[in-house]
Picture 1 (cartoon, rainbow, N blue to C red):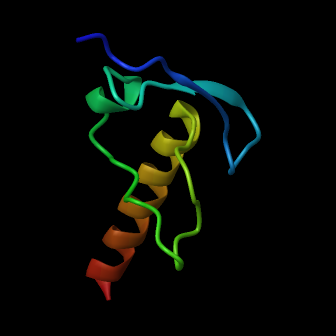
Picture 2: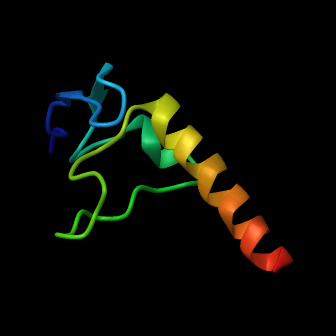
Length: 70
Protein backbone atom coordinates (compact mmCIF):
# COMPACT_ATOMS: atom_id res chain seq x y z
CA UNK A 1 0.00 0.00 0.00
CA UNK A 2 1.38 3.43 -0.93
CA UNK A 3 1.45 6.27 1.57
CA UNK A 4 -0.80 9.23 0.91
CA UNK A 5 0.96 12.18 -0.74
CA UNK A 6 2.06 15.04 1.50
CA UNK A 7 -0.03 18.16 1.97
CA UNK A 8 1.31 21.58 1.16
CA UNK A 9 0.53 23.83 4.12
CA UNK A 10 1.04 27.40 5.28
CA UNK A 11 2.15 27.68 8.89
CA UNK A 12 -0.48 29.49 10.97
CA UNK A 13 2.22 30.94 13.19
CA UNK A 14 4.67 32.44 10.66
CA UNK A 15 3.17 31.99 7.18
CA UNK A 16 5.97 29.74 5.85
CA UNK A 17 5.03 27.09 3.30
CA UNK A 18 5.98 23.50 4.16
CA UNK A 19 4.84 19.97 3.46
CA UNK A 20 3.12 17.60 5.85
CA UNK A 21 3.37 13.84 5.33
CA UNK A 22 -0.05 13.09 6.86
CA UNK A 23 -0.73 9.42 6.20
CA UNK A 24 2.93 8.57 5.69
CA UNK A 25 6.39 9.47 6.93
CA UNK A 26 6.58 13.10 7.97
CA UNK A 27 9.43 15.28 9.27
CA UNK A 28 7.55 15.82 12.55
CA UNK A 29 7.77 12.12 13.49
CA UNK A 30 11.43 12.69 14.40
CA UNK A 31 10.66 15.71 16.61
CA UNK A 32 10.59 15.40 20.40
CA UNK A 33 7.72 17.91 20.67
CA UNK A 34 4.42 17.01 19.05
CA UNK A 35 1.71 19.49 18.23
CA UNK A 36 -1.42 18.32 20.07
CA UNK A 37 -4.51 17.53 18.00
CA UNK A 38 -6.49 20.71 17.37
CA UNK A 39 -9.49 21.50 19.57
CA UNK A 40 -11.79 24.48 19.74
CA UNK A 41 -9.45 25.96 22.38
CA UNK A 42 -6.21 25.33 20.43
CA UNK A 43 -4.10 28.29 19.42
CA UNK A 44 -3.34 26.57 16.10
CA UNK A 45 -5.76 24.46 14.09
CA UNK A 46 -3.24 22.62 11.89
CA UNK A 47 0.41 21.60 11.69
CA UNK A 48 3.17 24.12 12.30
CA UNK A 49 6.33 24.40 10.21
CA UNK A 50 9.53 22.84 11.60
CA UNK A 51 10.94 26.15 12.86
CA UNK A 52 7.72 27.13 14.66
CA UNK A 53 7.18 23.70 16.18
CA UNK A 54 10.71 23.83 17.62
CA UNK A 55 10.23 27.42 18.82
CA UNK A 56 6.94 26.50 20.50
CA UNK A 57 8.67 23.58 22.24
CA UNK A 58 11.36 25.95 23.57
CA UNK A 59 8.70 28.43 24.75
CA UNK A 60 6.73 25.69 26.52
CA UNK A 61 9.90 24.35 28.15
CA UNK A 62 10.79 27.85 29.36
CA UNK A 63 7.28 28.39 30.77
CA UNK A 64 7.42 25.05 32.55
CA UNK A 65 10.79 25.90 34.12
CA UNK A 66 9.39 29.25 35.25
CA UNK A 67 6.35 27.56 36.81
CA UNK A 68 8.58 25.12 38.67
CA UNK A 69 10.60 27.99 40.17
CA UNK A 70 7.47 29.48 41.78
